[in-house]
Amino acid sequence: MSKPTGDIFISEKTLSKALELAKLGVNEVIYLHHRGEPFLHPNIGDIVRQVREAGFLACFSSNFACANSNKIKEVLLAGITQIEVHLSGGLTTKTPVDKIFKNILALFKLNKELRNNGCRIDINYALGENETNNSVIRKLSDSIYFDENMPIRFFEPHNWVSLFRMKDLSIDPKMCQWYKTNSCCVLSNGDIAICCLDQFGYSVINNIHQIEQIDQLMLTKRKICVGCSQYDWFDDWLPNEVLTTPNYLKEVMKYDSLNEQA
Image (cartoon, rainbow, N blue to C red):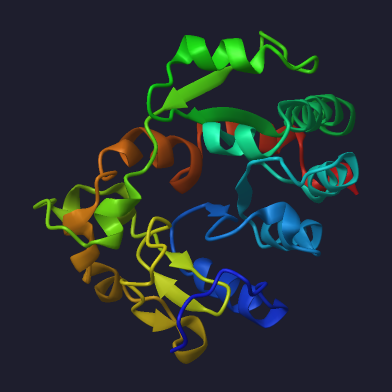
């Protein structure tokens, strides 16, 4: 198996095989984000469309630094179900806040025009050291495109060091929602990892091109989990928004079908 890399776009062959295997499982959502920025993929609209046509809800996360109106329109028309706008102090230091929020406003506007608000939009902000909710709002308010009515959720970011150093925190892998829901990640080269936090490929257990189904036994090899500082964070994050289908999304699918978008 090759090591996961962040600079390789997923191929049509790998995407098709991943969707084929996903259909054998019970989860209804495909989360199109791992080690990369979805809007950088030249065929992101086609990927979203394939996921929806395969019968899944399609979600992804983006920092919106490289988004634009054309790309946003492309994924909305393709049937994207949920877009998570992920912000942080590091991002807003490197990228003008005006640019980011101009793109976010375009997302809200196009979502209303093209989808009758059929795509759920979630904005979150990873608080940095010495940052507070109020201090961040004051900083973002400097942008002429910032709307104080935008719902922003603040949270403590991942402790990546806890994974990089593989420090044993005595975490029980069975407490993680990725384990509870038999979920996993497929990297762009087809490698299977147990969750999206594994940025270093410690948990790669097989490659989808070498198997005919993702066996539950594969997902029980979770040595990396003992050092994960985010196992309980996912109790709120993933079950409601990624790994299971929320009721509001099921209702949206009744009115926001692919046929209506064609």
